[in-house]
Image (cartoon, rainbow, N blue to C red; front, side):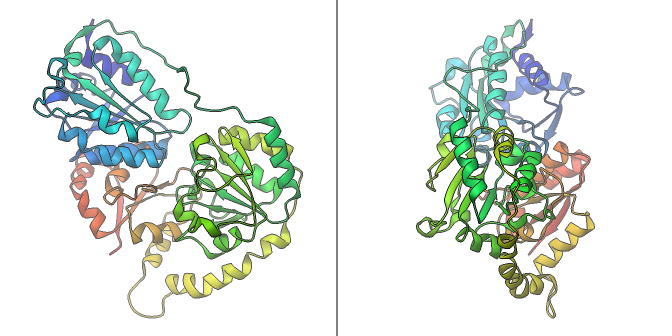
Length: 469
């Protein structure tokens, strides 16, 4: 027999967890007492604020492809995680937040540091659940990890009442790999695949939009095979920048409001628009009334709710990008779009002369942000993990950093959270210990979570911090 706290630790280890980011408090103290006995199997990273724990868990998950875990106490400790949970939801990042809670006998009494965390977090999680009995712990942890990492990934919250932490239970590992009515990866429709393939085969001016879904589905190879066989130029979203090497000849740059000129111009000139693992965010589309109205739209996505949400789709390819891209590539004929690709050059040269060259090679005044980003990228041989905060530093870094390896960009895309960068870089350092981590931030965002510098020093990790002010 073990305590519920030990059952929790054993369940995390059973799920392959090796690192937890957290901050202790009274209602989670039994778990922390137990954590000390398992310090060789499970490393605890003591952050300076619970928001830092969630962003660190995000950074860890984004570079490793594993579920990030954070451990906090009840009340304000739990509510301090809300921003990170919302950020993870919008950016499809798999994290599990385990929060302490008052004992079951005190629930609903407005006890000290009691808050209904399940109700608060339900709209911004894939699953939010309160563990009231020790016998439910192994099942709840397994279910939480299954939900967080399956299908379209996202955050899960477990509200762990204190009496369950202290109860005795016989620990038996559980494996949850099926939940009734939950279909994480829908089966693609073969007829729709064939129709979409025919459209791509006959297209004269196809353009692919590459999103983070490619990396989440580990479909980088399948993406390249697809693009090269059909000879389709591509643009990348902010979160999808490292899904396709910056130096691949079919990569035409970043999409959207702060993206490259050619990709945006050609979006409104292509005849077939192929969205792959992206959600047509407003920062990419701009005014939907004038967005790509001339094009037929093919949308690859694992989440059916994204289809037709913002942009009307002609053919929806539902499923994991790894499988659906592979299936589609088999149906394509070898093609060449030389003239279409050459047409990008005019916009590329125009942007180079008026924007890029003056930014990278200024003739007078101070050094520019673009110069700094470009120099850091070259110094790291374009192989580092880029972490950014939010603001101008994010946009300039995204435009001028170059990527040659997958899972190399960690930034707050959907929620746009200032203060994200520093703790996310800490998580990335633990998730990819063999890679260089370069953080670009502004003075405002850095000061929002600047206390996490103490975490870096205590943990003895290496993070290159570049402040663009």
